[in-house]
Image (cartoon, rainbow, N blue to C red):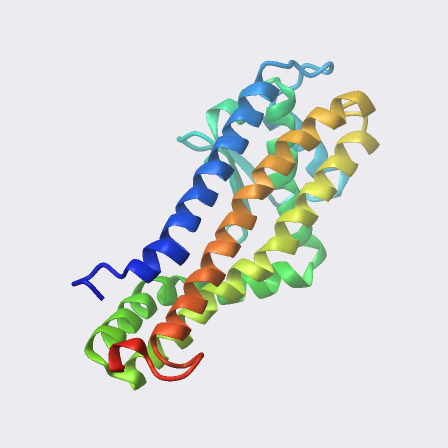
Length: 236
């Protein structure tokens, strides 16, 4: 390594991860901007659509709240709260309809006991710990030549990869539920569904990019720590 900068990390992890992330962000922002310009035929806000989907699925214990930020929409399973950003909560566009329905999809998963969601939620604490402390421990171990320390750090970071991999079917399933529910309940037409699908597919790219980036980081840590492919280069 050159100080704290490893050319191998920059070339095989940092740069690809950055480019993937930027591309995914560009895709979702451009798709949302496009969808935001197309008013839904029904003219309902994201909040109203979310409430109608909850009612249609017999879910009466989930509240809907506005939250600050752009595309900061999320479902909080601990408090059973659906939080929608201003553009979605008040928006009457197809983009707002799609995002609102996607987040309600998570509430439906929660209510129906969708197994991948339960697994994802159970690994969140370890993934959060692994992304911070695990990475730090791994880099310190690699930098100082302490293979044991690096191995512990890599093991902790593995939970980040587990989270990202499990998160993919959760997010794709929520989008599938969203589109099916919107059409089945007459909230959007079949023609409008195509634009909703465009927005949700773009949003899915952010999760795919995060998963690929996490896997690349794990492979890098395994190689540099000597746990994959023989002894660590630092010890050559």
